[in-house]
Length: 378
Image (tube, rainbow, N blue to C red; front, side):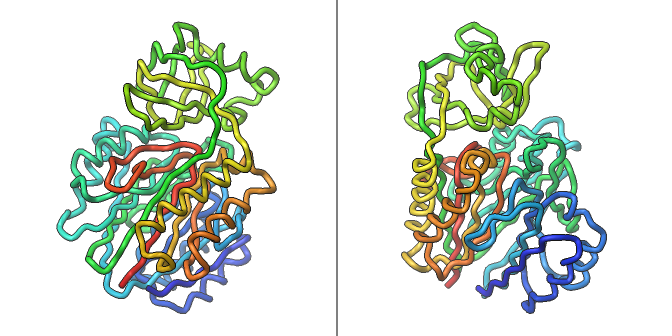
């Protein structure tokens, strides 16, 4: 596996793409949405790499090496030794719901020799939980899924994903299949947030819309907790997600507020919150967030022989970035310490992360995690 990277900080730097001397099989491209749709940028990409697959999306911050950038484009070019790739995309507006969208995407991938599937999705117009449900209806259980939901800073206005033709579009879901026995893939996801306060039961919800907790309007309760910060919703909600536990499961997943509805006093989340779930408010502790990133890195490298990770894709929630502020690079550095200097690191800050909780487990949509996918090729 050969890897080269470049970071573009402004429109005037598109020519830096020519510093990539590889003939890459794949380009990971994460960046500011307005830059991704620039005609000059797309022209340079297509002219310089006509045979390369482009897999990427808009973001809420770009990760390249051990640094975090704003309003930039991070490009990572990869040439594999023998691993084969297949890239497919779908327009979610062509489907009745997100489950069917997931099924439609997954049906495009032959399962023979499929080692791993990465998925990037529009971060606003999708039910991420249902998307994953649809994919897992089709995909063999032994094939893991990782990926994330595109970001848009903290605007929550418009997200973009590159489609099969290399065009950054809204309402797009894209999958990248890795084929062959020469590739080893590791993954890990962890948050590090702390539960506090009393447990409450979800007494009324539908998919990713929460109406009532303990038979009380969800938005009213949430605003009471936030106090002065309530005026800054939904952005302020990034700092106070919910921990959700369903049935007897010991695995609690995290859900972040993505929107509010004053008319019916409901909260819109990045993924489903089932009725009957037990939820608790969460708060951030910087040290625990960084520890969570380290645990994610350890899980991903434990699936690959120590020191053999060549590429690491980091997808971290924008909520973590808002909390860590000027310390945001510390979680990246903590990951780098565990993955090792030999690995090339790229990634982005997202509106949601996709990964199993554990090796050989079912895949879930997460919020507020650092989710890492590592690759090593024989």
